[in-house]
Image (cartoon, rainbow, N blue to C red; front, side, top):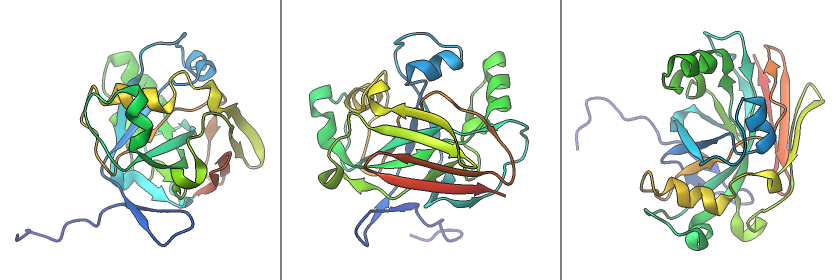
Length: 227
């Protein structure tokens, strides 16, 4: 095949404890999947899950220095458990969903909250609020063979050493298996897909010069600096 110019290199996420790299196909995200966060964003109760996407090249494996994005005066953080799939399918039953999981990682869904609020008000898509450059820092993927399938455990984020988000995976409205099953009714999932599973309460505005450190129990930590 002759390309008119060289194609971009695929996005790969390191696999913890190995020299292997997980090749990313698509990145899906679940909105308002912790009850307290849903309330702070104006939601209420156990609503059916809804999804949005980030481009794969918005991911920043390993974190590090992140450019503060343009067109916003209200950049906010959302620490999340990320699910990495090694197998996909459509209409996956809940009881078979975890068999599709390769592993888990800690990630941050950076959000231009002012752009999101404006889009919500006008009934427009969230793409520019969620899918901008460098909007998805992510740590190494820990294989499920090492971590198991976490049902509970601390998930947290600090800004300049002040803890802002401090929750537990057990507080998720929809658990990992349910998320996979629900998402697979909308699209056919495949190996290489990542799913950001939502964030606990405590999101806050960050500025240039801030250092964000976060973690999920059993999956390590991730640090970024906004420059």
